Length: 240
Image (cartoon, rainbow, N blue to C red):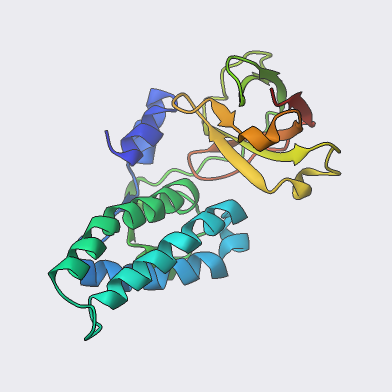
């Protein structure tokens, strides 16, 4: 199952056709992929605030691009080019491509704020004839941490409109922003870590050095057009 199919099927089935409206085509030929990644990574950084790309996504992609650039440069240098350098670059391309795909899928593919020129750069094909725009979610969330294994938090997330765990029909993710420490953050703006919770991903994992600390969370719904609902009140749990 490809990433887009998993994303769509994580939501209510009626959203599957909506998810399929826009498509992404990342180049496969290494030279074309190199041009693509050289264009999209700077654009992601430039438009991060405007398009709602979280800092963590860009922090994670930065070392991947640096490694790719070095491997690609080795293929053209007189001192290092050859079959070995080409093989190393080509073996790393799927890793870089998957990382770029995840950012586009999560933040850009169905984001109505992305202008047509940038859609072209990202290789997003828009099917405007059947495009459906839904309003932002209005439901808030009440969250509670559930313990099932060490160094991990699971969640009970209640839709305050229905008082049930089921997400509103027009949503595909619950976004968590969180902060790990001993003193609570003043607001969601202080929470630099993030996770997207859906049917396939239901937990946040921690490192051993975090044991004994607290994780402080805010949660909100995101719909199939990338529109975001209001943040929840803060909830927390100790990392054990």
